[in-house]
View 1: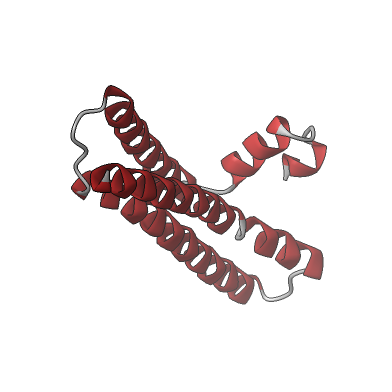
View 2: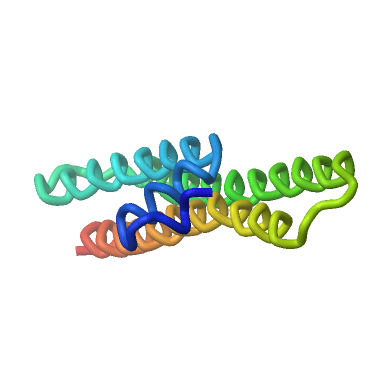
Length: 134
């Protein structure tokens, strides 16, 4: 595991992303989708064109699915680790804890996408509804 040797900051995050597994890509795609829709809604607000609230729900949905994918990836990783431990028989506690630590990277990434999606969703929803009532 090269995470111990990583720099702090961006280098650490990049290594954690690589170690986190393939579900990190799915969560990232959902985060990009959420950001794209948010930027589109902000552009509509700046242009002062009518804003459709239907697309706004996709921001919340992307965050919720990212959170669910993060938790699902952790469960799958823990099941795989337990299966490997069962087959190997005698495993050191350090190896078990290293695997348990790695299993938290995808849920943390999913939580980050979820938190930002909720912030964008509620802020944009408040701005849009206040503009409609004016």
